[in-house]
Amino acid sequence: MATKATQAAKAAAGKAVQAAQTLTSATASARTSARTRAAGGAGTSGPTDYDAIVVGGGHNGLVAAAYLARSGARTLVLEARGKTGGAATTEAPWADAPDFKVTRLSYVMSLLPPTIIKDLQLEKHGYKIFPMGPYYQAFPEGGSIKLYADDAKRNHDEVSRWSKKDADAMPRWDAWLAGLADVLGPLLLTVPPNLGSRKPRDLEQTLKLAWRHRGLDVHTIADVTRLMTMSIADLLDDWFESPQVKGALAVNGVIGTWAGPYEPGTAYVMAHHSIGDVGDGHLGNWGFQEGGMGAVADAIASAARENGAEIRTGAKVGQILLKDGRAAGVILENGQQLTAKVIVSSLHPRTAFLDQVGKQNLPDDFVTDIEHWKTRSGVVKINLALSELPDFTADPGTNLQEHHTGSVEMAPTMPYIERAFTEARDGIPATRPFSDGVIPTAFDKTLVPEGYHIMSLFTQWVPADWNEAPHTAELQAYADRMIDCYNEVAPNFKSSIIHTDIVGPYEMEHDYGLIGGNIFHGELSLEQLFHMRPAPGFADYRTPVPGLYYASSATHAGGGVCGIPGMQAARAALADRRADLRSRRRR
Ligand SMILES: Cc1cc2nc3c(=O)[nH]c(=O)nc-3n(C[C@H](O)[C@H](O)[C@H](O)COP(=O)(O)OP(=O)(O)OC[C@H]3O[C@@H](n4cnc5c(N)ncnc54)[C@H](O)[C@@H]3O)c2cc1C
Image (tube, rainbow, N blue to C red):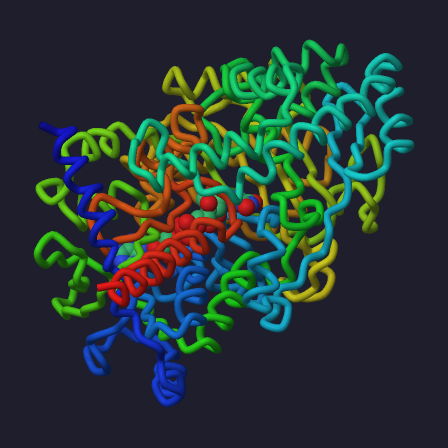
């Protein structure tokens, strides 16, 4: 029964991808009036009918809107919060220090493809990245390690201090990863085929993908299989011997993940964070956006507005309106009804589908898939204002030095990271949390008054159910322990802190819509990747509801501030419009 429902919905979607069919070309005057309304405000005045409505003004929603508006569609973005950006946000969290701004949730850029930067002319709109310095870990027992993204000679010198064997293995490891990135990188921009579907379009997509990979040899396929199935710990054990080097390389395997380094699948998470090229040009290394991550969202919003999109903030969507089984508009929480033939949602899948479309309007098996969607992560973001830079015992001085310019880690070994996870899985916030720290003000002088710094600590883990209650006092104690860990290696650290901002899973869920506190709208676990993201049969940015497209980080290539889901959802809507126009002309 459920399967039939899915087939019926998919058949309808195939036949009636008419969602975009009535997207019309915006006239110059429509564009101008849209721009003048772009200042925001959820007022009930203004037009109520659009070609396309985008639900959620996070960076993916904004990318989708920019592409739709660029194609000529009269496009409206509806954002619940008082500002756009979602998890890409710059805020001033301290009322008594309004000059201090923090990039409150996400903190570094890497995966935004050159295609999007170019298509939307983001540099013209303020997109400006400072490439990060080295990975840096100072060890509680003394000494430190730095790893450089692009300097094999210095890496060899650094790693040799811990293991000569590991130093010699490092270039082979880098080459191995680069080879895998050549295979996996382009997949990020590939629309996943609906594997198993016999529909001509799906079969064609599956065959195309197989053909593209016809040159892969047995060894490459074996390496990809290892990467997809192994734990980062087992993988690193095959390559390296020194606990310090393995600790440094394990961090990317657990970022944002409800899994310790010994869990299968974490090797892939490492690769996801290490791929530097998504197939349309070389990406820079990780870097800091000037003005914080909110400035990335602002640049995309500015591009969307320039193309004619209207953006309303303080406009919370309560329901997606259906008419004759098709998406037809939205109802805001204030009761206002807005209509469009194309709706693009960029919200968490539980909100978008179960709450806003409604289970009764969706196929049973799709509902089950979304109900089973895994969305934990136990992440706590700690943002600090500092009166001076950390003075590391291993590398002394509060003057700005190279080791302040990259990631300033607290993840000394894999057992250290693993302990933090197993404690949280047992229901205890980590005694010694691990942290991916950065000091963006090493480059970016726009965030603080002169002489001060911001340090942003992305930390893990607290128990997965801390999204259900604020846990304010326990979060403060957890943050204090995290600060103590840094203080052990940089004794001026604690006394240099002048303001502290702690964002836990409850706040992430309730203030930012990140259900379960997961930073990617859903875990990057193997069963939730590629053709399974967000549900089998619906990984092509379309949904069981004709006219409703899906652009959140819960689709393929998300999460992260990569914009790919937004671009692909807009492309799907526009492709359906073209197909529909062609079929109308033939009639
Ligand atoms: C702590 C943290 C650290 C991270 N660090 C990084 C990093 O360094 N680099 C990186 O690349 N990625 C990072 N990420 C992940 C990345 O930020 C997200 O994957 C990405 O920003 C999600 O973008 P999105 O547009 O898909 O969704 P969101 O940013 O979640 O946007 C969805 C939007 O919808 C709005 N909304 C919710 N409900 C409604 C409603 N009912 N009506 C209207 N609007 C609504 C929300 O307010 C929000 O603005 C991090 C995330 C977190 C939380």
